[in-house]
Image (cartoon, rainbow, N blue to C red; front, side, top):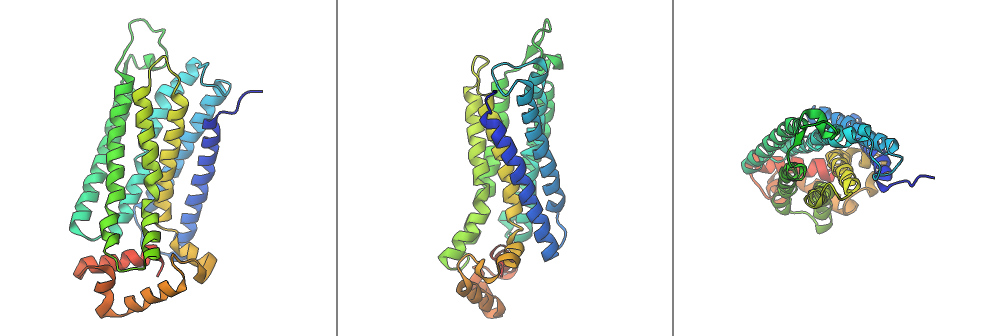
Amino acid sequence: MAHFPPAASVAIASIILNVVFVGLRVWARVLHSPRWQWADVLVPLSLVLNLVLATLILVFLLSVGMSYSHPTPASLKLSAFYIPMIYGIASAVPKLAVLDVYLGIFPARWARWTLLATGAIIICNALAYIPTTIWQCKPIRFSWDHSIPGGTCNDFRLHFSLASLPNILTDLVILGVPIPIIAKLHLDKAVKAGVLATFLSGGIGLIASIIRFAMFLQWTPATNRTEKIDISSLVETSFYLVAACLLSLRPLVKRVVGSVASYSGEHSRSRMNRKLGEGDSTGELVGGRGGEGKGNVELVKVVAGV
């Protein structure tokens, strides 16, 4: 009986996780009926890309008998060409969805410019990744068929390692932007911790991205590290998508579990409601004035569910 590799388990788990969280997000959006945002397109697109990525990895495993040790020409084509191509797009789209949500609730000028610049870097990196992956070998078929005479390739390790660096840097920015804004909110520690946890949920994707980068640094044609790279790619793209979904799930949590579904209990939420209802104390709660203060009130309403 063939060994069932960890990558297959992770691929199946990622399919379930992605479908569940996107389904919950759709349910929450129907309940809440908020204004339309680009994330409403980017999240379903991310789901499709993640499902394709997981399916391709499963097809690869089936084609090699659930083992990374005996690749075939067809499986090499998947591993060296199609899987990296899908990953390049799948790692970018959910992060753009997160940025779109952030732009709707972080009004500070520095935050908006930082987020817009980060989005531009993500898009440029994805657009550069696709052609450099397609034409990393001459002829293109030499990427998976080294029997072609006279074929040459660029340094695979250098190419994929460099492509991972912008992902890591943009992840750090996405995780870092909410911290100083949320830190200024005058909330109970438990409430603030819950809000931060929601925004930092994409940190698992960052960890996976760093692991993927490290795997490519250690990769050589003589070593078999492809499985760990596939696993980290699945985890990275899946948790980016989960993070994009979590930011919209609060209305659903309130609907399903009622008053007990609060970051710090009913007492904290009632205090927040009272403060938000008092015009003079809104600035005190959100730690800002004018447009920034109003935006931070929106942040508290969206994430803390008040």
